[in-house]
Image (cartoon, rainbow, N blue to C red; front, top):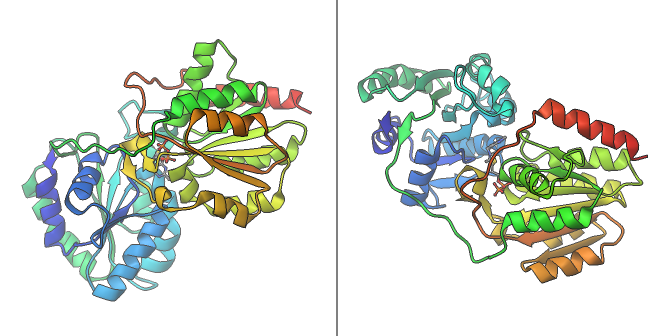
Length: 375
Ligand SMILES: Cc1ncc(C[n+]2csc(CCOP(=O)(O)OP(=O)(O)O)c2C)c(N)n1
């Protein structure tokens, strides 16, 4: 187990003064330390997605000559492959970067199904990307890290990238960091309202606690899960999954319940949804301006006008609400889609929130059978 200050001291000895990435629950000690130490500033930027973080890091290197650090959950490795292979790689520009990767689904440890395969291929992906790595677990000590550092410095000097892969409990930071905003509506309340209005409509929910809460709301109401597709992985892609369904089931209303972090991650999808213009499409974004599911680190969604963006893309109607009665008002007069609804919400969730007790395969089967009935 490595104390975060010792870890970042070693990073700074390797030349790092700039951090960017996408938060991860396993990297909470690093993310919380960075928020505590730098907040969002010239030294630390939370990116929209991991690929963006790599590009931002490349720009930092090009303009300063300093080695940047990109942090991510291993789920984000797919998002970095393109800029690693075609920008950083030493057969292209040879831009060195230090990655810190949270290893969810590490072999031998029980984790959620969406982390299983990703966990198994994590080190292989780094090998394929020609990124040398060191795994840090709860037994790794500072001497081992110092030893590895000298190899890494040689690689970085040759324009190659390196990674620290952090197993569960690999890093520690004793300080608790609290994230809050000024809104009061709870995500669970918002989802429950949508479930009530949606009735037998189709719902596609985003990654993280949104899908967990939707699952538990169905359980508590004694309702079937067949109406819902839980996007347990694949952050940022719920709205496109919902689009694919809406186009093929034009007689059924399709709801996407999105998060602001997920929306930002692949925001180009909004343009495609709006220009395909399915009348049966409702896009709800629960905006807590945070990556709440992985600890509450901020997004930039409180500094954006999502309604203007939706209208600019071509959604037929767009609303922003932050109270239950306003949400009810919008839901009662739902018109032809595509409709966009931003619901501003508090950061937080129940401490005893569970996880889906059915498998993704069971979810898919029940969902597809239901969709068959929906013609
Ligand atoms: C590609 C990818 N990067 C990072 C993650 C880790 N992750 C899971 S949920 C989440 C935060 C989602 O934030 P948001 O969409 O705003 O929803 P909230 O958690 O606030 O409800 C993150 C970063 C992931 N699953 N996939």
